[in-house]
Length: 430
Image (cartoon, rainbow, N blue to C red; front, side):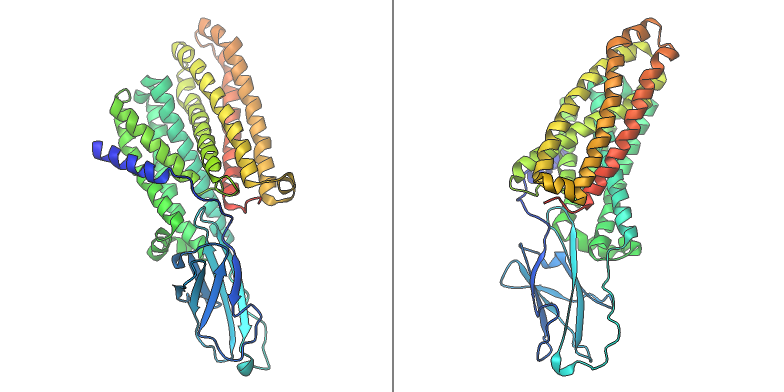
């Protein structure tokens, strides 16, 4: 296990540095310009962006869907595209570029006509390819699955290791952790293909092609996804050791901390936390936000699906108060870090109220408020009814209100994760 721990530590160190602030990559100018009428057919099209780009992250397609060669230029923020010469002198291409920080794709269409060869009769122009709604929906679903798996795995791991060591031998707890690990790995692999189809304006079939995976893994966001996949592979070693009863050994704790840090950091690196003037604070806030959410949600799921069904009063008396304290600290971290992230990404009250990103953020806040109401009901039960439940040996009528409030929390949390997935794929408020 030592080589794996060393590898995990190295990956965490490489991924731990905060990324520089940047908005989504956008096109600044093109030569020839959109709508131009050059005297002769150009051999190249030059695209200039607002930040440095890698040619591997830029795609240029003809209206027929053929990909054109893209090469570097002397300027780091510009690329050169080799053009064919159409017989009628009409050029039309669609470009797309993947932001190197969060993997968001920006795209547009450029068309121009060579004056000397333009035909008098034109006909209707071909429409530009657009992002497939099915690909976008599948990408949101994959991100939702990834967030849920991360929360269940990290939070469930912490719950068993810190509050309920006996849970390592409970079939429900073991199944939940195994399902979370499987979902996390599959969601990461699926996201790579969907990210490629999304960036290339392709369809769901493109997400299954090996060439799509190769293209994505050559980009910055693709490298982050590959690192996350490797972290999930290393997490299998940590999970196996936990299920074998090694949770109290120093080596296991170091490995678990390294894998947890790697999973949280690689997840945050594909979000919007670096947008704004303080990317370091954004990265820290995002890490705290994800960690707090994972400890809260994963512990909640473990409590609802593994601890409560056993109805053992001794376990309830030992585990529930400890989780209540952990949840209180986690929620405090979520709210504090969320405020920092909101200001970092949205930037103003006007953007909060008048952008789609701001609207989604308000919806997420409203649902989170409902979750906190259910959490408050659970906390009140712990304070006033737990002792009575112990005395009555887990009487069903006494424990039922707590079960209802935990179930309500769990259901609402799934909605929060769905809105979070939409936020990641939406344009930031800035």
